[in-house]
Image (cartoon, rainbow, N blue to C red; front, side, top):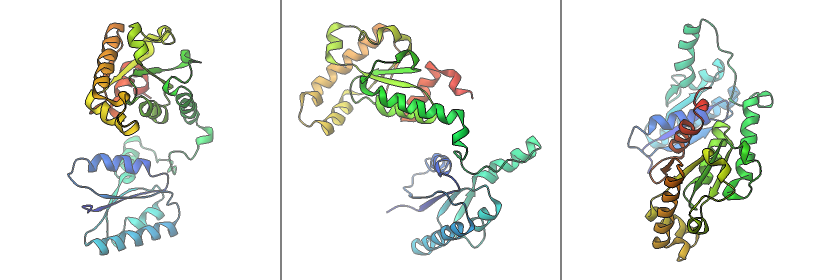
Length: 274
């Protein structure tokens, strides 16, 4: 059973509320039931959510935690009210009002991160990066590698694809990924396709036992998934990256966010300042 229900209520996608809220909840040993309520942009919708929160409180016998990112005062007041039986944590008011005082100006109360997507250069950069990542997934294409921000290399199933997509979606980074295979290890050098772009390469490795588990889910009882083969491939890939001077890290115990941040720090530190 979940320890408690947690609501993420937003006038936009709810991503900001959920991301920030989950970072805070991670400090506690609880297993909450997550309820995201996005696009709450009218008073009527706010009342529906408030009723749902109150019904949850009565049913569970404890008040839900409610993370709120609502910029409209009238809509927010429906949730942030003594009649609401949840613990309401208003993120925007917590941060925006002190900043208004500090800057000496009022915020524009823009609803939603993507409300002006059609006019946003950053948004279009992210879309282009996502398309690039999809076109260059798993070594599908060698075209336009000169425009890549980073090329992820490593054995199959070491986390290259999700990391590439995360870099594209969250940071607008054009990330290609290229699997290292036994033929590469026999030659003892990077694939010729990657050689001109070695400075853009970043390696991912993984614990062989964990790799074997992942591969068994994809191809049970195959040589591809055998622990002996996984040990060989990981050992050979790490030796190659070490020999070629390619920075690398293990994805075994790291989140996609941690991996991506390390790559940005090492390959594109300018993207950490924007």
